[in-house]
Amino acid sequence: MALLPILYYPDPRLHTVAKPVQAVDARIKKLVADMLETMYDANGIGLAATQVDVHERLVVIDISEDRDQPLVLVNPEITWASPEKKLNEEGCLSVPGIYDGVERSTSIKVTALDGEGRSRTIEAEGTLAICIQHEMDHLLGKVFVEYLSPLKRNRIKTKMLKARRETERA
Ligand code: K1U
Ligand code: ZN
Image 1 (cartoon, rainbow, N blue to C red):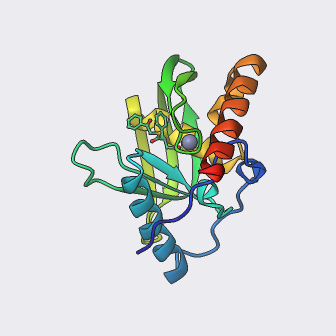
Image 2 (cartoon, helix red, strand yellow):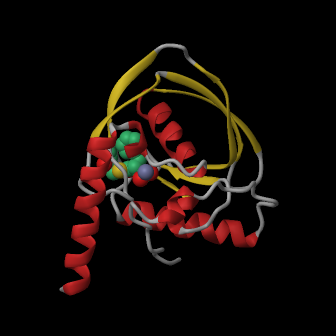
Image 3 (tube, protein in one colour):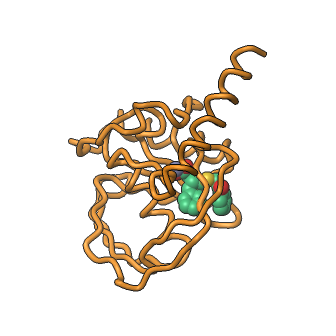
């Protein structure tokens, strides 16, 4: 297994629209293992392939306290989203240190393949529903800061670019 480098906002590659995974083969299984290792190492509850510069429809999630219940979604599609929405605080491994409110459906239904290529239907609510919607936005090239006001987004962009320059100088 290997740790994969995570792209940081405002990297333009984060805005790439992912293509469907053609087959859950050895390459995808290795990518899943590497993405899980990368997500656990970064203390995240989710990671989309987009964030590691792979533009295929694949996400990994683990919202369990003991970090032992990985969920792999290949070619996920939301088939139903509740009209009821709620504002929740979100973070993102591609925008470290920034947390802000995003309105999301409180419950969703999702179809996907699992890490073995088997068909699955998932009914999610609470943190899992929020996380799936956040990760599926990544697959569409959308980062959560795009839900915020242009003023907030520009401040975040400036902060991230400054942090990157300081890291590069160190
Ligand atoms: O996609 C990502 O960047 C992962 C992201 C998922 C996410 C967190 C919170 C709300 C929606 C989606 C993270 O894991 S950021 C890490 C983090 O801030 C966090 C970790 C554990 C619980 C809650 C937040
Ligand atoms: Zn994210």
